Image (cartoon, rainbow, N blue to C red):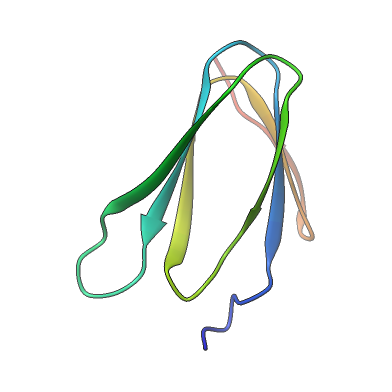
Amino acid sequence: MSDMQGEYIVIKAKAQGVQVIGLTRGLDTKFHHTEKLDKNEVLICQFTDHTSAIKIRGKATVMTKYGTVDTED
């Protein structure tokens, strides 16, 4: 089990068409899941044994236990 198991982030779209992309863990990093959010939609994501990173494209607010980050246009 990874150290990140159970870690969550919350993503709130501030514009239409925000893309959220999950990336795999392991020797080869690959895209394994994508979501598209409309304005004001919220997605709760979890880091797992299979998900090592989450990439966000578009205007959004990202909330973690470490703080809140707003993406730039």
